[in-house]
Image (cartoon, rainbow over all chains, first blue to last red; front, side):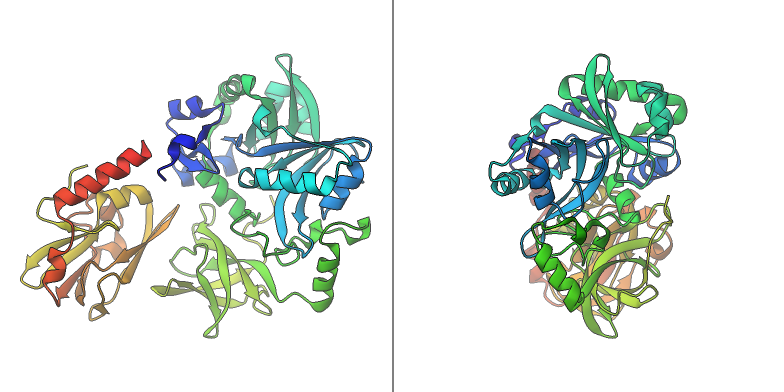
Amino acid sequence: MSHHEDLRRTALYEEHVRLGGKMVPFAGFWMPVQFEGIAREHQRVRQAVGLFDVSHMGEVVFRGPRAREVVQRLTTNDVGSVAPGKAVYTPVCLPHGGIVDDMIFYKVSDTEWFVCVNASNREKDVRWFLEQARGDCEVLDLSDDYSQIAVQGPKAPELLSRIFGSGVSQMKPFTFVKTAWRGVEVLLATTGYTGERGGEVYVPHRIASDLWRELLDQGRDLDVAPIGLGARDSLRLEMKYCLYGNDIDETTTPLEANLAWTVKLQKGDFIGRDALVRQQEEGLKRLLVSFVVEGKGIPRHGYAIRAGGAEVGHVTSGTLSPTLGVPVGLGYVARPHDAPGSVISIDAKGIREFPARVQAALLEKR
Amino acid sequence: MSVPKDYRFTESHEWLKTEEENVVTIGITEWAVEKLGDIVSVDLPRVGDEVEKGEAIGLVDSQKASSEVFAPVSGVVIEVNEILNDDLNVLMSDPYEEGWLVRIEVEDQEQIDELMTADDYEELLGKLEDEEA
């Protein structure tokens, strides 16, 4: 906490301060944790539209005639076979199946992929990419060149189309285009981390604050406002989206983390494939589940999960769900306690234990 | 941020007020309350529970974090603040009076003298604020 002088500021730092953002250290940056309050910001994104500064995220480009081989080797999902203009969410694994990071691959062409990685893993990821690319293609860390603004909520497509043209509302989820704003190239993707419609815009720093202000301006009648990291976390948690470092890390595999849909064994060899095949054959011993607390008590990362008196797992994320009005969480549990309806209890550091029920999903698919 | 002069404090942001010989009231400080933000639930020990100095005896949950309440002294819980079952706002609006947490019958008066004075605690808060600036 005392090394704050090393923290970096995003190109939008001044905007956040001006708008009353409460700034906190996060992944090496000063980031806004909240503006008007986590619950209100959360509801705004579920009901209208919110803006997130996610410029702390890293951007990496793979380029070259053999880039496809490299990205296919690195990822568990099939980021290579999709058409240009598609975005693919994927884990990147170690040989033993543990997750190095989870990220989105944007296929620009058959020889180029633009990748968005977690801020806290940027350096580790780039090292891993370079090591595994073995010189077969260019690997460029462009994190210092890009700001990123996420525009999320049911009214986000309307807001984005006011700025970037009416074509935006016709874009399918997980696609992207390179377009221009005020003569500057931007990458506009219909991706996000909230479960709502909308997109993420990658722009050079020099236009970031102009675009931010324009979004607030053009979205005034849509009830747009800035959203902090606090609501970003509760929004993703309600959708059961994993947060690296909390729900997934190098000790968890995509299969355990309920990300089997991102593991494409048929695409050919990739790093971690053998381990994942083995794990699947042997059967999973634990699974990441979502659960709803029955009563009060907020589950937190690291709390033990019990069933029938025995410890059967641990909590990885938890919050009071602003949408449901009840505490919810994610955690790993041993089978068969992963079955929806299973009754578990959350042990808050021995101070208290409260009951919860495993639920297949927390919110319906939006 | 000013703190009540006749209270004692801990580094983990609990306060202690001596009510009468051997009976103290315990709560969490305004600084702790502000750090937590919107408090959504509070868990307290039961009347009759024996608590050890330094032991986690309660839990305060906010939207963004959960914070343990550590016993500043050893003793027996003789009363808990029932108001908090219905109204957590008093904890946020008046942490030093109406928002108290538990009353404890103290075993060893010397443990009270070992706690920080108001001046010590204000100094600690000053340091924490400097670190944040």
